[in-house]
Length: 257
Image (cartoon, rainbow, N blue to C red):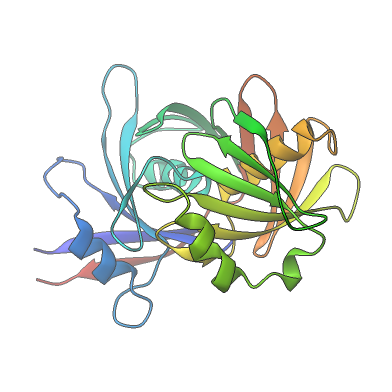
């Protein structure tokens, strides 16, 4: 099977996108692992299949993490999808409506090149008791599950050690954000562990979850800049959460039979 892949990234959080116009190109765990492998494949944090939508929705996305597991939603991934479907002629833009496993999302590719996405409501859980001094913990649901850990310095955290342990705390896994306040007002600094992918340069839903938790702690307002290792994302908190940031095309890849 000849397969055409479009590679996009949102601040280093990268995805391979299959524009399946006819709906006849399924993706599975084995293909995803092979394509996302950074040494023997193309390399990506996830693989996304895009098919035509129905009932007023432009397209439907199916997302798999780098390990092949299926995921409900990705904030950076869905913003990359918006760019990909406009670039590929599946939608005229600038507005794109995308259905994911987490629901229907409205996106806009703005004149300044950034892509905004309505991520739906954030459900912030009660604070959980911690034995580690100066650390605070909350669970957040924003279409997918997160653990937000407020800590003094994310740069000092051994993410590769703690990430897998925390991911395994919930059946099916959970995404983990290590968060510090600042450096400026209404700003956060994060490091990120994504289930099925490991430490990533950026996370859209992770940034939304971090902002929602920090807002619940009354540490930030409703408009938050989240400093990811790969760059900055903007999060606007309200009845639903809006995520704003770049999405860029990297290359086109053709997989020969």
